[in-house]
Amino acid sequence: MHVIAYDNWKPTTLNGRPTFSVKCDCGETIILDAHTVTPDGLVSPAVECTARSCGFNQLVRLQGFKSCDMSSP
Image (cartoon, rainbow, N blue to C red; front, side):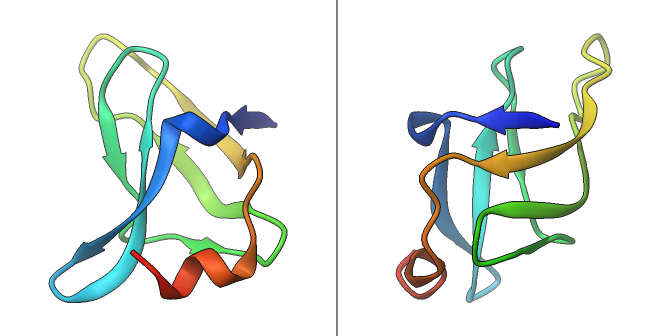
């Protein structure tokens, strides 16, 4: 499991609904629009980077995540 450092993820909105974005190690920003995040920060399904040359595809946990982060993008 890959841990996304606290400064590499943030709350955001997509089409008016709250979600999260993460910064991949390659620098690409990934929107977690088809994912769920548990109260302890576990993201499901696996996060896949869209950059052609990257290949990142892993289960991740958002470091420092609190379930209250879900309500304040």
